[in-house]
Amino acid sequence: MSEVSIVKKDTLTEDELTHILRDCPASLETVIYSSPPPNFQFRDNFRKIDYLFISDGSWVTIDNLLTMDGREIMMFKSSLTNIDINTFLKH
Image 1 (cartoon, rainbow, N blue to C red):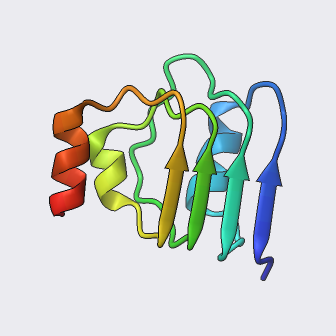
Image 2 (cartoon, one colour):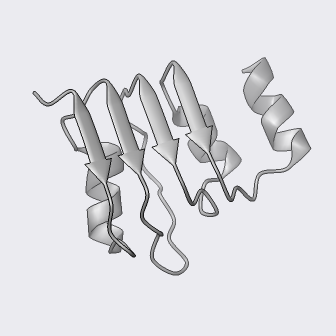
């Protein structure tokens, strides 16, 4: 099993991004520098990842955040609200 997965591509397809988030075998660190496809929605549970970095988290919902099981989550370009973040912190 790989410990680190780094993805650098301009834009991922829906299948590629879903595979990375749900099925990719990297267990310690996953870094995604790519943009999501337009209107991307992730409806599955995240796999366990110790460190998850998402450079464009515009697609991440509070439901997604609540299914993340990791020690450290770093996300940029998020559309989450302060209420969403507070809900996550109290979870």
